[in-house]
Length: 213
Image (cartoon, rainbow, N blue to C red; front, side, top):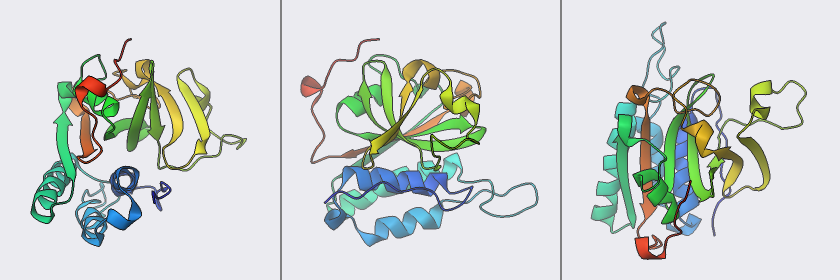
């Protein structure tokens, strides 16, 4: 059985929460090794803030790169059907035939760094026309009168009926922006992503839906 996707417990743990959600999205609960959950938490939350407090600057790109490699090697050693790739800078785009779009068409999941006032990790789980299905681990209620007005800008739609897949539908146009608005990927030099596949359920390119802008 597939698990519900989860929300972060603190202001800082979007990284391990989103990586865990990628595993929950791709694999049934009965398939998931406890080692995977343990080591995601062990290696994330590695950044220090200006006061020298560990974890209070979230998870670094270095940690995500390491975990991408660790998960792939874990899969090879344990015969667990996972494959990961870390992308950075100008590799992180959502254009036609890009690696991220191709991964979503093939049934993969993508951890993506965007902005939500501060750098923030979200999970991409699918594509529909010019929009991306997203699970944002930072819990918000769309009917909260104190909700930031930026959540209602063009290209952001709340989803409330797909708890195992998505809670936002974000336009590719918004995600692709080089600014620091809500759900924008920002400057190319800051971009990062991790593509994850369940290799048993990965679709072949021939069976993937063509993406057209």
